[in-house]
Length: 230
Image (tube, rainbow, N blue to C red; front, side, top):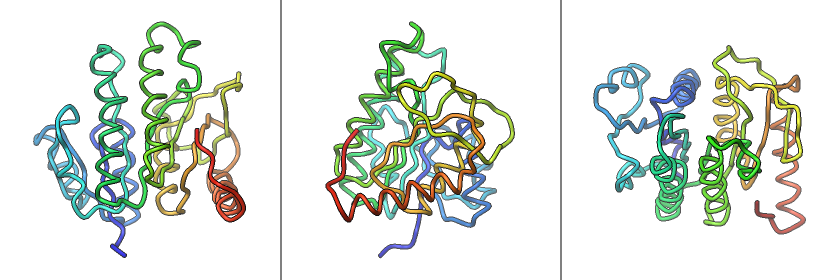
């Protein structure tokens, strides 16, 4: 079995940088996929391999010798529906295809809680949320072990270390820090949580306890029943 090596897509984003820092802090080898060479030094200082790639073109070269993928890229709030389709749906689908082809052990995708209910989202978020949902559905059926994260509203506050599981009917949606999203993403890799969609918001349940319960539940489901899809 290959030694653990993570491909971080969207490394230069606000959440991606936090994931990169956690990978560095935990001494996990990783490759940072960047769109611009100008950001190379920031990630080289963390010990990351650097690969340049454009999510709107073929980026399969980034998957060489990779065991796990974290897709943390996302379109900016000001970008058009074209960019949303390209980054929030099509590139995620391509990443799942490349992961399948290279027999990657796991893909972790950072989606959004609003993917549960695109039609109920405000106009500005409706198309974005629909693209997220279509990408999630594709990943879940592609045949690669996956963890799809659907965090609620994001903040740039320091890590709280705790979350609350959420779902389509959750009405109270406290913000969750990007730092906590980064921790959940990385622990999905290191804890082997597979074939799960994890929706969460800010809360008071320690992340370790939440993910341990999901990991045990996943193991029980795998032993006793066929896995369910989204």
